[in-house]
Length: 358
Image 1 (spheres, rainbow, N blue to C red):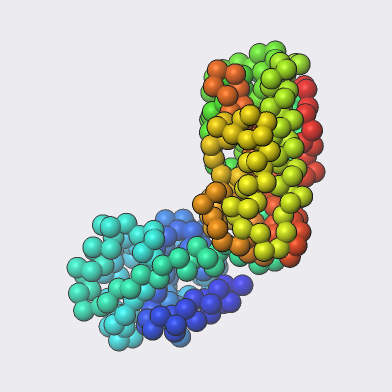
Image 2 (cartoon, one colour):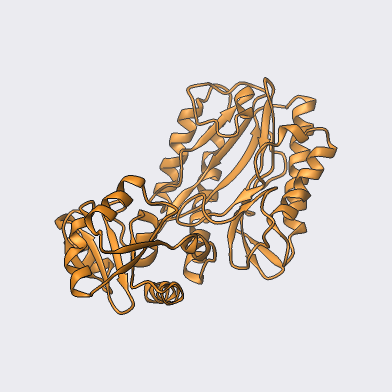
């Protein structure tokens, strides 16, 4: 798996006429090597060799996880650790992740290696990681299975008097117990008027009868993320909140059904947005319809009004329309899907989306 990814990088190196690529971001280090000491490793890859730079805490780990790499032992933050390799390999042009490297680190590289030309590789990793292989598909699929199972287990706890924070904590515990290695992001549990906060992290608020409860959460499996959202009602909702739920449900189902090969991110977004607009809630849907998911919970293409590009096959992204009305509440429904030719594989459709009153 990693050899194929390295070879793909080397093809880009030939196209850009660079002698080596220096990889500093934790996610791309993992993507190319499998190294899970996130933040504590750097890579240098040439057309024929590959090195990983990390300290003595990870000597055994790198031997196990990164057999295709030679170890340079030392602090990964010390850019001087590259010196012997750059000199012995006579490397004069190095590509770097200009989209993610910090200005401080870039200045450090330039000042340390004044004779080396550093050339940005642009969106290479963004484009490459956006398209998933079969192994990545399996990891994300498993993460979604764990998430769905865990939410089912937590449903009985969502009742009047329950605390948002306690529900989030229990959900995260259940995901780990069911096989996740970590949560994918801070769990959102927002009830009542707080459900109008699209990113309303769980608070100490207690759930009341009539509340909408929006839960947006995910877990990691082998360092790949899941992401899903469901909105429930504790007791019968008011007429407007019931209407809002049905509009969001229709908008989400329409986007899933409207996907076809060759559709752009904007066109898919338009399907949901037009339904919400016609229902009178256009101003209450302020975010994009979806985003790419993989090693990071937000990566790759955005499915939104500004994306005129065609959605590529073998990409994983969310479909999550929402309506948020201040001082009333909000509804969001989110599934994670895989684009396969002219259809979508829905990773999270095992969990019911029709209105559920608890």
